[in-house]
Length: 186
Image (cartoon, helix red, strand yellow):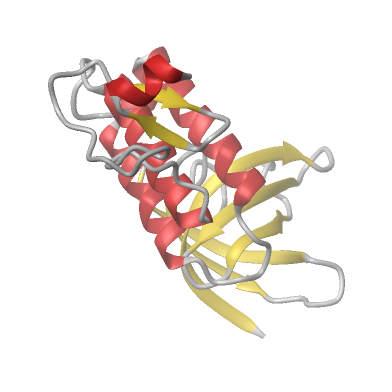
């Protein structure tokens, strides 16, 4: 059956002298792997149409028995040129893609995860000073989607609100922030 979706390239690897295997994150199908037959040939319809972190409109033949689908066509919607000129942005994008390929479910729709991925990668082009905050934002939002977000609004020990003045303290073993009083006791 032929399927059409918007997809983000997470990984690419050569399969043969003329073909590639590409792992995509989609809103409608979750993580899928497609074979792009003949993508390395000089007159291929896929030439220049996909690269790491491209958002593409993907048309593929769905094959349920071995998990690898066959790509029919892909058209780039967002190429993100900043990732080709700024190596720090490219390193952050690579980190995002690696984490997403590990936590996403295969052939299972995950719209929130897809939207988080697109927002995080698009955010890399906005400001170089906010990259560290973007990394923390991405990790906290991802942890929330996975159901493992740490508690940061209230103390995990006494449930008192954690308020300024900071510094706030964090306990990994308890899974969240500690107020100043509880941090002294521990």
